[in-house]
Structures are given as C-alpha cells and as structure tokens.
Length: 344
Image (cartoon, rainbow, N blue to C red; front, side, top):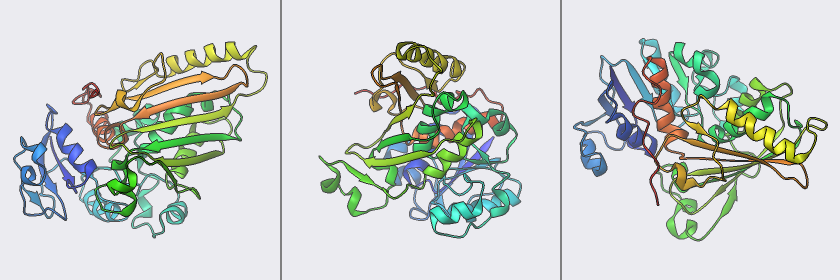
C-alpha cells in the first residue's frame, strides 16, 4: 500500500518517515512540507538518507492513507479534503481528538474547521479502542501526555478502585514535545540545567485525559494535570497519584499486590504496554513504541502511585500512528515497531 506524510519537516513527520522506511507492507510514496518544498528529503534531513523522495508542496494522487503531522487547525483543514476524496487519514494533531466542538474551541482558541467529523473520528489509543480503530477511516492520534496518563490510570479507573476526586498527574517532558519551531522557552540556554512548570492554568491535553478516562469509568475522575519541561530531548514521565476507594482492600500491602496484578492482567496481551518490576526511566523507552507503567501503593498512607513513561515522538506520536495504521489494515500490530530502546 502507498502512504504519504503531510508535513514531514517536523519532528513527528520525520519520525514517521524513519519508521515507515522499514515497514515491509508500506511504500512511503510522497511527503510534503511547507518549509522544505522543492528540496530532497535526504538533504533536509540527512539522517533519512535512505529515502529517495522530494518534499512536495501537495500530496500526489493514488495513495491509500495519509498521515498528517501539521499543527492544530491547519491539520484539519488539510485532512478534510483528503477524507472527502476517500483517503484514510491518521491525524497526529489535536484536531479530531475531542468529541465536542465547543470544548475544542475553548482549549485551542480557534473555531473547528470540520466539526461534522468529530463524532466519526476514532481516538487512536489502540489499547482501549482497537475494534473501532480497525474499522475507522479517520484516526485522531492521541497526544503524548494523554497516552501516558490514560494508560497509567485506566485499569484502576475502570475497576472503581480510586476515589474520583483528587486524581493528580504530575507530568514531565523533553523539549522535542514543543516541536521544531524556535522559541525562547526552548532555547538551549533557557532549558539547560533548568526545570519549569508550564500551562499551570490548564494544559490543552487535559480534556483528552478526562474524556477517555470517563469512557471507561464507573464514576468519571476529576483530574489535576500539571506539566513540566525538563532538559532532555525525548521522553515523558508521568507520576500519577490517587486515593484508593475505602473498604476495597484488607491492608495497604494487599492493595499493593492486588493492584500490581490488576495492571499485569489488564495489559497482558498488549504488545506496547509493559508493567516492569521497578520504576521505569525515560531512557528505557527512548526510540521505541513502549509505554512502561509501574503501579505501587504507599503502605503508610494508602495513596496509589502510578509512574508511566514513553518516548513522546514514538508511542506519543509517530509510532502510535503507525500502530493505528497496522490495525486499520490488518497488519500485525507490531510491524516496524519492534525496536528496542536506545541506551544510554
């Protein structure tokens, strides 16, 4: 099958090209990029030297599927004509993730270009929506922070094991999550040897987290979500905290053991979620499509702590998009995504 990438010139777009290069069932036939149109892809990105393509201003005809790696609003404007022409689309932007147009407009500050597609779009977290992904023509690829947070909390939320109030997600991300555009806050001398909280008044990824957890919850949780920028290139680490439901466990030690078993069983058949024996590091997921989820219970206070991490450009973006494509077309879900993490 033939696929194209809209906006290959960003971090997510170039990561798509890198992974698709080794996909045995896919031909990367066309790539576009506003800043690189007319240049060879291997000149714009020397690390993609094996891909013999020009960066075009528009996608060519004859494709089976398109990935869009444009920013929000611009992505929907590019995707809608493709969908109307019968092309399947995996959109890496936020444009089709939320089901309510007014909620999108509140968080992103623009009117949605195609609200008629919001209900049709499938939220592409395959671990929760695999059957819907398989039948979809429009996939809303999840955000990087929400992927890690939702996978961290879904098992206990689904089983009603935490109190719905007082759920906290403390999130930390490397600077590649901000994209390739230049800004003062991602300048080397500002980021190096520095940690900063941002979007303290509310991060745009919060409504994704609450929407998807509400979909599996007996009682939808109220989530407080705080993000931090840390001086590294790739990676997200979330530390999630919640209070366990009273009376559900005989002791906090029992709670710790039962919850770890719950997570192990919940993700037993998931190729890209692992419950490790010790708290994960971001380096354990660098360059691969894994999300590592480590649940524990503080035996003094009964507080649930779940640590999750992933590579924001792979499981948090391009790798997950290819995972969705594999499910849509009936390829083995792990195709082209079985690489191990880069270490150190």
